[in-house]
Length: 318
Image (cartoon, rainbow, N blue to C red; front, side, top):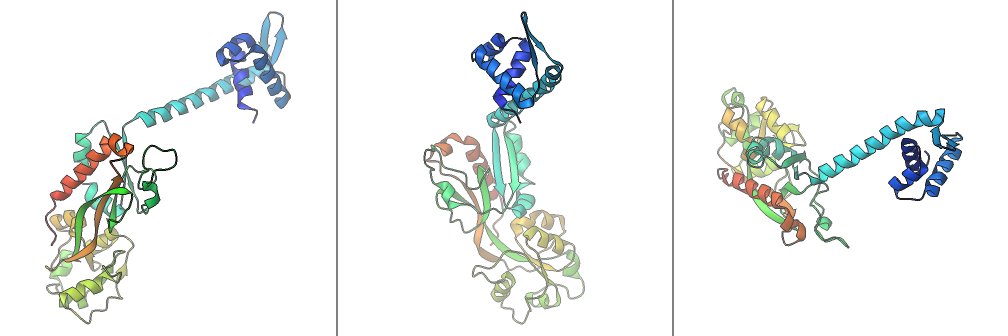
């Protein structure tokens, strides 16, 4: 590609048919415009102007180049304006664990959007790890970074140990066996923990507090032995495990906080009363409000407060 400055000089001179007027538009000297155009002609090995006593005249090559070049500069200007508009818009980027996004946040989000119609909320379902280093002030920066790249506020399932950020505990989590109503009432009906030996166990990526299989921890708490927890179906997301349980494929250890809609609709039932509390919980992570970014981001504070209010409405799990 020819140099961009040379293309700009030609486009302006071709529009005005004058090096002097092009120079005034570009805030350079006429000699500079003439030099740029001459360099462009040498680069293309084509004459773009005829230098006449009365001024400039476009050659056939110049006439062919001018409209496409004008279109190109117009498109560049549009791209820059769109970028500026994007930066000026009130946008809140939220990074949320996928299961939490689909099972808890999405059914409630309309309440926040309705209360903040001028705010563009962007939800990114992600399990990307929070980088503690992003909480520190970078050299020359006035504000702290975001917990996750391209996110203003984050909801994660974990221990809450995120140094350098403001961390608010959103809600504790417990698990209990869940299944389709058909399994709870069919052959080998699931009425006690002992009945689990007759059913397929469904596993997800959540582990117990000691890092072992979650089913082992629940069965130990229930005082049940002799159930082979190595068998069954394995999924890498809690929502997939819940879907499999609702489809009658087995029994999952589900979180009531994520399965609330399915339990209310009767797609899932929790036939055994015992809940196993987990050390992990859901946390809201955002920039420290003592920094300049925290003081300036009222939308982050509003969303965080709304999340905490919504979580406070949840019935206690244990």
